[in-house]
Structures are given as C-alpha cells and as structure tokens.
Image (cartoon, rainbow, N blue to C red; front, side, top):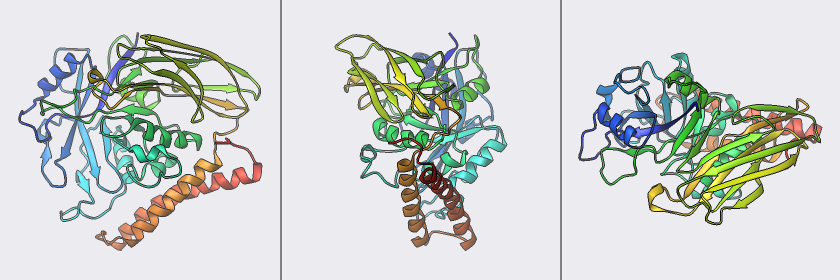
Length: 407
C-alpha cells in the first residue's frame, strides 16, 4: 500500500559481546519486518572511540533484498544541546561529539543548528533523538533539559524531525513538548528511533519503536522514504497500526477551511497488543476518547467545529507488556494541519513557555567556562537569541490581535 517502516536510531555495535556486520543488521531488520534500518556511527559514551566508522559508505549498503535498506548514518552527540540523528549522509560530520568535559572536544561549539545546516548542504536530514523524560509531562515543571536546543531549531526551521517514540525517553513527555512546538507554528514531524544496541543479546530489538512512512510507491527508495518522513507522512508506534483522515486529508497534509466549518474525523487503530484507548488530539488537548475494552481494532468517528487554525492527530495508549519491549504501548500519527482563513498557527502561552526556556538556557551558557574561543560562545548564544526573537514576536503579535490558540 506504499507504507514502509523504519527505525532512525540503531547502534549496530555499542559495547556488546558480538560484532555486528552490515549484513547482520540486514538480517535483524528482516526478522523484525523492518524496511529501513538506519545504523548509527557514533562515539562510545564520552570518549573518542567511534563505533562502526569502517562501515560508512555514504549510501545504503548493497545487498539482494529490495524490501530492506541498511544505511549507516550518524548519531551526532553533543552533551549539552542534545543528540541528533543525521540521515541520508554523503559525508560524516566531525567531530562526532562536543561538550564532554575532560576530552579534546569539551567546548560547546558549534550549536546543533550549524550542524543541521551542514547536513542539509549535502542533501541529508537531521533531527532530535531520545528527547525528553517523565518530568516534561508536567507543563509547570518542564523546562530546559533533554533536547535543550530543539525549540530553537524547530522555530528556525532547521530541525527536520523529532523522535517522539524511543525506549530511552518518555513518549508522553516528549509529546507534550512536540505539541507546544506545533502550536507555535513549527511543522516538525514525529519520528521513531529505538536506540537499540544490537550487539547486546538482552536488548530491545531493532524496530521496537518505528515510523511507518507513506511514499505511495510500489518499490522502496531511501530518498523517497526520507523525504516523506520529513514531510510528516507517517505515524510512530511501538505496536499499533494507526490511520487518520480529516475531511479527506491524511498525515502531514494541510486543510484550508473557514471558521465554523465542521470537519469529519476518522481514525482506526489495530494492534496485536492490548490497547487501553485511542484519542483524538486537537492542538495538544484530548478532545475525544474511545476505550478499547479488549478489542484489537478500535475506530473513531466524530465531527469537530473549527474556530481557529491548528492541527488534529490521533494517538493510542496501552499498558506495559513484554512483547512490545517499551515502557508502555504508544502510537501517534503526525497531524493534519488545519488553516482557518489563512491565519497562522500560534499560541501565546506556548511561545512564552519557550521564551522562558531559551532565557534560562542562555543564562546557563553565559555562566559556563566551556568555550575554546569567546567568539564561538557569542555565535552559539546568537543562534538561541534568533529563536527567542521569533517566539517573542509571536507573543507580541497575539497581544495586538488577541488571536491564536487558547492553550
């Protein structure tokens, strides 16, 4: 049907007892019915040892299965700004890490925005991995931490995706920040990266969390898959299969409406695992819930009256269960963006949240003595200030117009 699964974050070798070769990774992907396996070349924890460097080709590894792609890409690992998955690379980005105290690369330069622009120059894409934890579920307690630079890179338009689903971060905590990003106009799509260490025998399998990406093509092509994922034509999952239709539009698409229009929403979840419920999310709020009650297929049909521009998505939640290999069952569609009378998607409260976030981060960076060159420090801070100005201008515009989302 033109849907292809992929995992953005797999470590073929990372401290385990086995040495995983590219064709071993292919076999693991085939065993898990995973179409795209992105192997991460990365330094080992806080030192200069780089795993799997010898397997980088700058294109997918050749083999005889057209339904499985193995592509060794890179996890870029700055300790302060947050880790990035860099995909569709022709050349690796070096150094592989920054900000690690006691190493040759303890400086906090460059910022992630600079790295992401370098990736774009070679035709690649990049996004944030294992972003946020449980503390980010609480909007009052949440603040800088985890993917610290994500709000800046999202509003600047240089981050191509965020791994909402990952076994080492909290999906609901990450989703709360993702919702705020979309409420302030960023169309950064949700993706999935397990962060599996596949050379460790007792470890979640590759593809434990994955994206299902719609290319619409009969044959799998990596460039098409990466482009469609970055366009949001995908859902993320640790098990359930999700569909979403908003008055004829699908995931990642835009629907132009007038205020007062009524939209027809339909969503379906299918799962071999136990589901608790399926929810319809509008602008970060749950607006409709259907309990699974033990069913393996759950459907939602409802009408929503549109009052302002925003977005609509569906998600599934379920209990902890061994086969899913994650802390709880989770699936989420990318949204359909609803534009009412050409108004932008904006939120004063969420923009103010990110202004506070960036202010705290800038204050922290100014106090740190981890810069090789004072000019580098000012360059990084300037990047954060650019993002802050965009959020602040949104606040000022909404104060003048008294529009935007109420969240």
